Length: 68
Image (cartoon, rainbow, N blue to C red):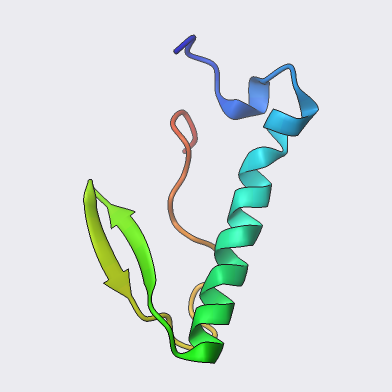
């Protein structure tokens, strides 16, 4: 990897990919909470099943490398 963060990418599509992923994750959590289904997530290299609660955190806590 060249040490740049995604915000420094030359491609506008690539720069916009992280916010798009956050929106998709938020929507997946909302939908899972509404339908009573579990999500499969990876935390610290371990696959986990989670059952989101209604109105649970609007933004996932994961960040890409190089972001605070």
